[in-house]
Image (cartoon, rainbow, N blue to C red; front, side, top):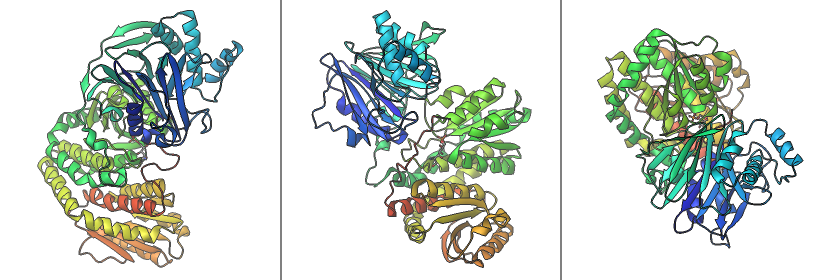
Length: 598
Ligand code: M6R
């Protein structure tokens, strides 16, 4: 994972800007952080364990200068320690690098470098890059050529930013890890994603795999590196229309709460742009008529994918399968050139999803992508893509992007079925209004429910039909931010095993269907668990009588759209349980927003 950033200016200093940009990248990793600055001809490094605020205090005596790079880390190679925190420098301190990704076979390079006299001060794969560049600079003093020679020797995934003593420039390389260049006036930037730089610019160049770049205060040059030969390429400057305010918590204590509260407005926006999805839905239909649709996603996006499968079948009569991205290599032997992959990823950078897409492409399958982040790798790898238009999501727990993914899957299935095109627009507006007017009520009821869960070891989430994936999502939210064990289950499957875990006072949160037939079945399921002492909490349509110990009635109008309503209390229950337990829901332990390792 990790976030990297770099700034080079004609005039002025970079430390404060680096800190601001790094803070926007903390969601990518936050176990250690650091910066390297070129000042008075020397490279100065400040780094350590902990968050950026803890490690870098700009009011203290930190050297400042007109060029610098920074890093926020999510450890992969080497424990969390000051030595392993980035940036890393070469033996002669002529080179500093920050890196996101993992290098293959770095031990062999490290041993060769040590045999040639290099002394390493960390256990990281990244440090080999600094020493390699130093060696190449000894062969050739041209920094770009020396850098490209070093990069040519690297295998694996990397986004690299490097500064070199005596030069007001930053060198960049990208392969399978995200890296964007931001264009300023008399200054230029680089970062792992656009969100880090929105407060500086909305003009970006998106590097492709296998490219290297040189940025100075007034210029950006990009080359592709083919078999070690550099070929100059022209990259278009693209405008990103996200506003920097979206990256501000405002009066909310955490981004997660702010993002939950943004949901009614996102639905409204999506309702107004139904026809933006028309071309994509036509493509989906066209390819699905030739072969099968395989939905590929991870985590929360996988749960949205399950709902997508349900909707494609129910509304569009289309057959599809859903494959967890990390399992795709082993489960995709049947996929070939007539098939279409529908890749769903908020970040567009999840390594498992990208790997699945690469495998699918190697089999000549078509790739259609649904993502949230402009310029993300997935948008570049896919044949067609659409955005879910949720704006940047900072909290590690996906909330508004799940709702937006589900809404987009509704729109696509409705466009394919044609009959429902107008109806889906009305439905989205209706859910948006209903959420907007009941948000405070849902909030306070969810807070009460969270007080019933705080001291529990296990919580179960049960749903049927289209709300079985919603139950999975509720369990994922609770476990990832509160650290309470939670399991989501199809309610009918429960008696085939998990029922053995039910004992006195174990809470089960049950999502009640609006449809009579399914509801009858789930009522039996509630009775089964309650007769074994379970504590049943129901989230349910209003004016319906269901046995439960605590109920949260909502204004649900249709079974098919109910996940968009039901998921909101589930998000808030997780949020309040986590915060009451003193956990930071925006930065759950061991997790990062973008999982860029397989
Ligand atoms: O960016 P993506 O949608 O590909 O991310 C997939 C998962 O890593 C992500 O949904 C993860 O499960 C979230 N932390 C869930 O809240």
